[in-house]
Amino acid sequence: MLKYDYRITARKHGIIINVQGGDDMTMFPIEDARLRSVGPTISTAGLSIIVYGWASRYRTVSSSDR
Image (tube, rainbow, N blue to C red; front, top):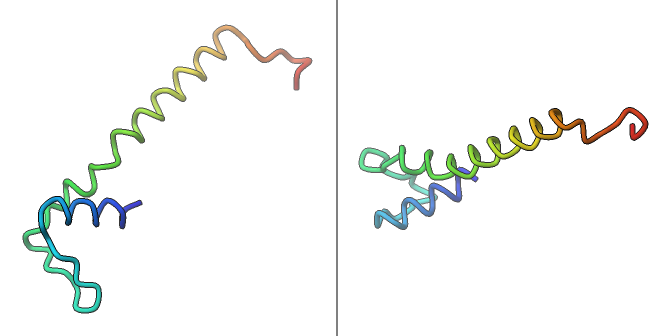
């Protein structure tokens, strides 16, 4: 996922990726690349906690179902 975010961010900022020689990271916005996938991850985690809380509160799984 990090490689994908790196490529997308480089393309967005017009930076050419040099696989053999290495990239010049002095002008690369690394924060943009790293924070690019945080939103969906936090949203998924939050939704999972809400669903777990709902299932625990209303006891959707009974002892006989296990």
